[in-house]
Amino acid sequence: MKKGIHPEYGDSIITCACGSKVKTCSTKKEIKVSICSKCHPFFTGKQRFVDAAGRLERYKKRYGIK
Image 1 (spheres, one colour):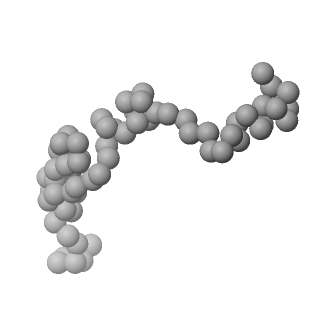
Image 2 (image 1 turned 90 degrees about the horizontal axis):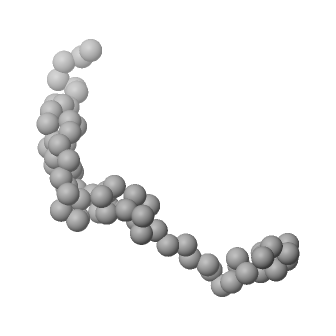
């Protein structure tokens, strides 16, 4: 490997908008994200399914699903 062309790899802290912090290693010292596994709806179980303009009802009606 050539010397002097690679960035320094060291400890890093990832901070989420919800306030959660994760310590890891990266070439950046500090990383800010808007959503993490502690506040994402998929992981928290608060996910909601959005039916856009009655598509689900039309599908059920078309194929006879009750």
